[in-house]
Length: 195
Image (tube, rainbow, N blue to C red; front, top):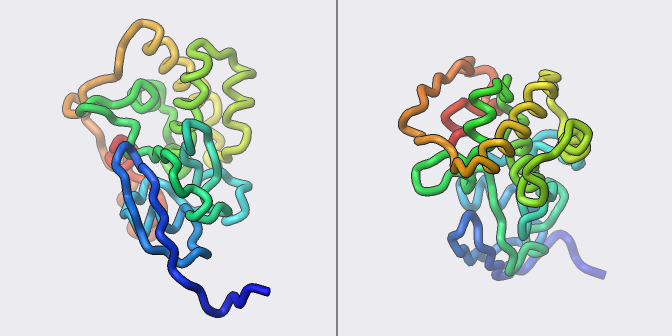
């Protein structure tokens, strides 16, 4: 039987947002903790720690997975994308641009995960219907209940992708941080979500 009071570090290598990282980790390290603490990518949030809320969602080899109950060692050799990886060459991903345009973000806490799920859906189907979008995001909770605007945002992003738009210049966006309340440290700002 494994002694859980001691552990031996293991080397884990994964490519996160196109950059390969090799790290010595306690094998009990959760993927979300490695991403946030080990790699400093805080756009991936921690919510329920039970995979119920979905705010810890990242893309593992292009598929949405919940990182709060997955060990980092299970992602050895994998490609991970976090919300920070959506923006490419200074341009927001169409999903990020559409969330801004269609007000798909409210408090912003669920937004990174919703954007990643939306991006994964649009990779397979760039013209999803309401039911398809709602099914895709069904594992992610929006406690602000902003689902209508989230669905519209993902569909708008699909329309932008079909039209050949790669997004908008990040510098052209006037992002305002409306979440300045220091008592709500877990909430993402517009700037954090955009990056």
